[in-house]
Length: 169
View 1 (spheres, one colour):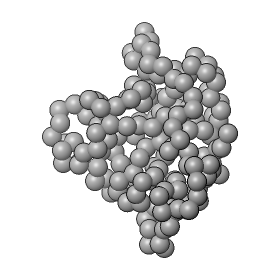
View 2: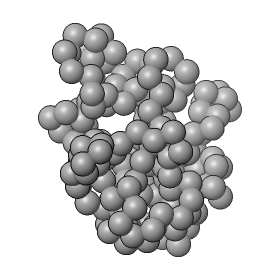
View 3: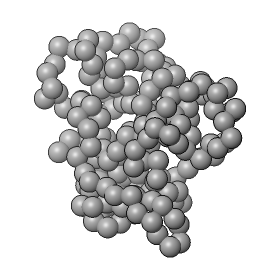
View 4: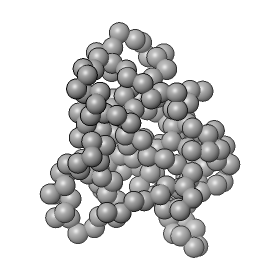
């Protein structure tokens, strides 16, 4: 099992300028690298390794729970959906499923999981979350356009809610 905390390094072929804009992001190897699929920096590309389920709970409505124990500091699920501009997002009535792509400090795009998403769209907020959202570059290295990978920040027991701290602006 490979832990994300050891991956805060530069993979692929990046110039010095790209590195300064991408500080704090995870950059996985891509087609420009010479490595094969066994490369340890390919975490999100390999997909989810832990099973989660969408459930309805009395107190907090829909959410997701772990169907098996999840180790600390490991990739759990990617937040996926329709990538739209901030202007288009502002024009939509329901922003419940919006996740801002703010990895470069200035938000240009939003992931809207309302119509096209996965289990991650049902993750509930917690003031004591067991997930962290990490900006990840896989196919391209554009600071404004990245992917959102959710990693466990501690051990999550089977049946436990999988939660994230939402930061509304």
